[in-house]
Length: 137
View 1: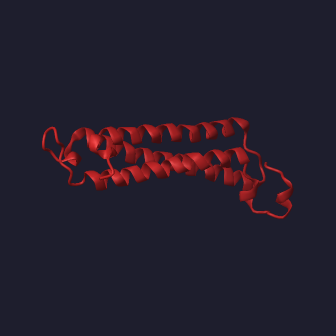
View 2: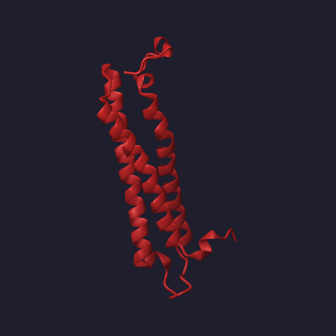
View 3: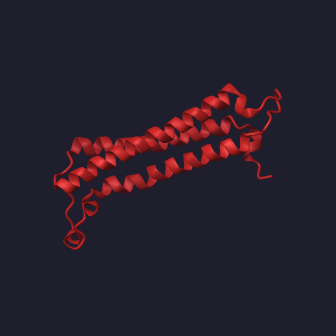
């Protein structure tokens, strides 16, 4: 269990969570938000866009649909894993017990995977948006 001088004043379980577990989530949680933003932008940008190559609507392209579905699933899975892990940490802190080192390592690994998975999903969305996606106007 996390012990620090501030725990005498801040008695809530939240303040007893291991710093290393919280710190890594600052990056992984932001990656999920960035991917959700990419999903939203992909849908808005490609809703009525027609591909230059074949004249089909981009959102009807199976590869674009697959990229979008994979990205949406990635957001859901990553959120679910991080929320589950956070709840396990909070339960441990409320009970006043320390998290086992093996569990801490797994939770940090889970967080690290989030960033990699989100980056890959964004890259797939970009690839399936076509070259015009990089232009501002």
